[in-house]
Structures are given as C-alpha cells and as structure tokens.
Image 1 (cartoon, rainbow, N blue to C red):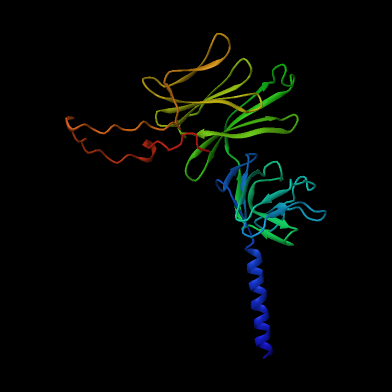
Image 2: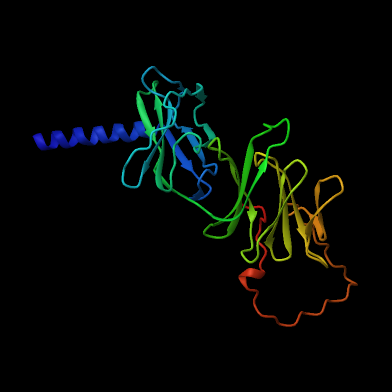
Length: 308
C-alpha cells in the first residue's frame, strides 16, 4: 500500500514538473560550430511562451531573467567579463516567440578550445528557471598569409598604428579568408571579419590607398574574384564580385591615390537570375551537347560566393 502511495506521489510530481517545464521553451543556435579567435560569436536565442498568460520577464535583486552559461569540455565554468549586466524587461504574449541575436565574443574571455553554451530564463512570475539544451562551439586560429603595419591618418587617432592580418580558415565545407585589424601597442583587437570564400591556390593581392584603407583582391571561385575595401579599423566599406573575361582582374592605383580594379566584369552574386523564356513552336530544336565528364568539385561555383 505504501509503495503504491509513493509511486502515485512520484508520478504526480513528474507530471507537474513536465507541465511547468513546458510553459517556456528556450532554444539556442549558431550558424556553425567552428569559429576563429576574436570573430563575432553570434548566438541566436529563441524564447517561446507556451503558457496561456502573458509572460513578463524582468531582472530581480537576486536573479537575472536572462543569462548564458558557458563551460569548457572538462566542466570548468567561464564567468562573464562583466557579471553586473542588466537586461531590459520583456513581455511575451501567449503562444508568441521572442528571438534575439547575441554576440558572445565581447562578453566572455574565450581562449582556444571547445566550449558548451546554454541559455537560461528565470521567470519571477512562474518562480522557475528554464534552460536550453547545451551546444558545443570550438574556437581556433587561422593561418596568417599576410601582415602589414600602417599608420593611422589624421583625424582617426593620428600617431597610432594598425596591424592588418589576412588569415585563412578552413571550415568543414569551404575555406574562408579573414581580415583582422589590431593595435598591438594598446593590446586592442578591432575586428576579425570573414570576407568571403577563398581558392587555396595562390595568395590574394593587397594594396593600401592614400587613406591607408586596405584593399584585398581574392580568388573566390573559378573565374570569380572579390574586391574588398576596409577602413583603418577593419570595417568593410565595399565588396564587389568580378567575373573574369579575357584577363584576370588586378588592383591598380589611380592618380588621386585611390585603388580600383582593372579587368573583368562587375556582377551581383546575390542577384536573382532572369527567368528563362519558353521556346516558341517555330523555334528549331537545339542540338544535344556531346557527352562530357562529370565536373570536379573545384569547377563547381558555390551558391553564395560571399558566404561566411
């Protein structure tokens, strides 16, 4: 009789726990699992109110309503750089979702290695914590293929210096070129930015204009190049895709000190291709092509040349 009683109590407790845990659903996602050191580590958090009431989320004197827990693979917790942060209050209507993207790089002291990431919501209204599943991300470093230190022009911190580095990073499905800008004397990293796919044979062409903006011309796909211009702090100002025609494009300095590309044809890799016209009844049939060997992976153009 006593065993039945305890079994019934356990079932009731489990049922209440399952019901309560279903009131708020928390999910996190990353675009990929492998990242470069200092690269923006964007975590997308989705909070879904599965209750019949409006969910009011607000920090209390004891608990933050939103927090991210990060630990190493051996279970060592990684505390945030600033533990005294504040969250803006939020309201989520019944059945609605709240989606936010958070850059974790400036918030946590990442080093090389693999980390487990989890997001947690505390509801003072429901007196409960709700956590997402843990996801793994790995922080690595690329291979440096170019490095140059230049002075900062007048009006932008004159007298200081910027070191620009170009790094190659191998992802599971592609190789990506990264641009890093830093002030080594001040120990400050301004950016580590992916600037597009990179064909591994050959090196990109690099020049600096009269404002010490860096210009990079990289081979992104067969017969396709990318021209990227970034300012003294590494912020990308312009990026153009160039289709090779008769001659391979090159970087050229104009008389006013600016940099342009010579050769090739500019095009938008993200533009929607034109609709194909249906053939007319009086059109003559097109001869079938002769059999050809299957294209190698190097001959296939990626769907998105600017993919990160």
